[in-house]
Amino acid sequence: MHSHIQAEARQTREGPTATLRDADETPALAALLGAAKEAVAVATPTKFEYEGRTYWLRCSIGLARFEVFDSPATARPLITGLGGSTTSFGHTPAH
Image (spheres, rainbow, N blue to C red):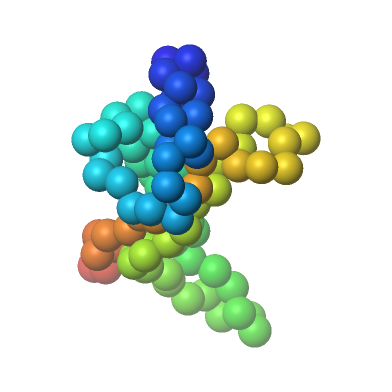
């Protein structure tokens, strides 16, 4: 799968820069960015402490910019993408 991701990343870098692309054009990159978005959603806490009190958190990414690197030493991202939704994650009220 990583070879498909690398090939699609190369394809996007060789094309016009700063251009939005349809996810259908690069399915491997779309899946990678979807997994990145899910990782952010899963890492969002459902609650946090502030000045001795607990507050519950629910949020939506809205519109987010994702940069995905294939190595911690790489300066240039493998892919940069925009993603988002109105789906909320974190705290589920009245559960």
